[in-house]
Image 1 (spheres, rainbow, N blue to C red):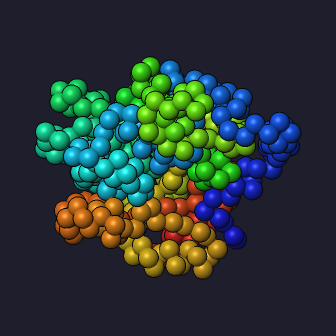
Image 2: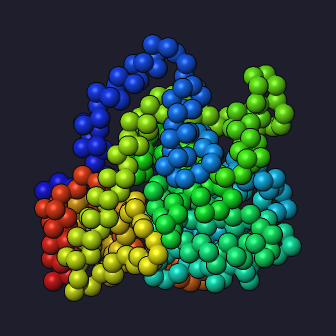
Image 3: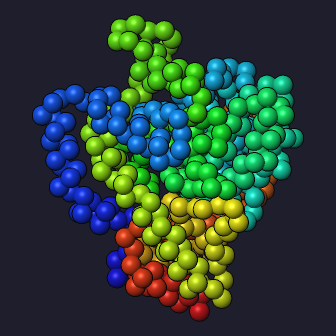
Length: 366
């Protein structure tokens, strides 16, 4: 059996005619940036999240960077975040001139350990940037309480959390602003790159719209120095075609996770821990596995593609040497990355495919 880690063909085929028709319409009009599809997507995805404002941008990194810039975060400032995430989380901070300050993760959920945040706050701290990793939200209420007491902004990295909920509220509405990625493999993915910002702050929304388009609100009138961070119309067509299916796709992912959980009972691997008040969307299904590398190689031989998200923590990356971090600074993060393995996860997985994956895992340990 050949089981891909993500199978985009299965998702594309039922939507093919609608997507191609939409793309043809865009090309007929040749209004390629910030046109009707981007504007409609901004309204539709903001409504889906429950946010007052939505801003389409070029990618998830740009989303986070634009938020930080709009909050006037820059040289000399510090932003508290985690090292166990994709590199772009810290990269977006550094691109403003600010410094990322890392806290460790919870050993069960692999999410920000909120209990460690307050000790990292200094006079230079301007914001906290929690990452809703793998499709599950951080425990936000205590984090928001810390931020309020210290006068800090909260920026959600929701790049893997399209539709995830915390106590009935969707990711993207829990902090002051949130950045999403529409990278092609995400729960809601473009056919290339794309990103999104959500916020309930009216003033921040106006400023972020300008920053994403060279600091301009009216063409050739530049109120500040911005970036070229615009979402294009073709990607917006793709995303609009997919958005009505997102809730059902997320429910499929949760059903797949439940099947994995049930079938993996009694095996040596540790299944994902769900926070009681969360509704995760399983962008990734991540186990902790003894002899992880050997297991991954065995599964590959059996035709099963897997991933490791992420093998080297950000604080130990060569590009971060200037921060002065060292091995041992974040012991939970460093241990977790030696054990984790992402199994195939996408809405169109079949029961037989999941059973084959689990049977193969059990075969390896036997």
